[in-house]
Amino acid sequence: DAVRYQARTYAIDDQLGYLVYDTSDDIQCCSAHVLGHFLRRNRWGVILWSAGFRCNPAQREFVRSVAIVLMSPGLVADSTALGALVLLDRGEVETITVLAGYTEFWRPSAIWLEEFRTGAL
View 1 (tube, rainbow, N blue to C red):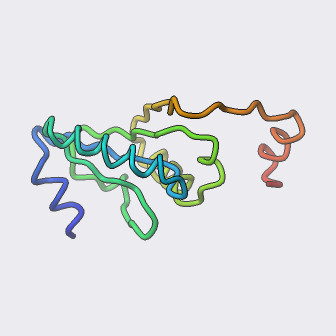
View 2: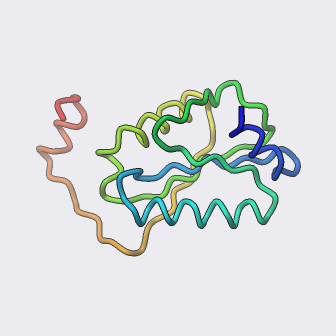
């Protein structure tokens, strides 16, 4: 698999970063690629989680891996990013979040939170 090969060629000590971001947001996409570039320069393996990418983190070959989630208001509506987060959680991959400084976040109403909790959204 080309993605695994690319991740392995840069990795030292089997460190891998899964970058999860709002794939429908151009700024998020650009930010993820720039962050991936800097991680590779520091000898990390990097996998950018985007549409069409298939991976099972539970069967990871890397000793140390972390999910780096670029937060944005549109993240909750991006099925690719949410699917990635579910798989990474099932694979027990530690997660850190990076807050995007270019946008403000809204505070959801109690009705929205209840609909989200019950799966009505």
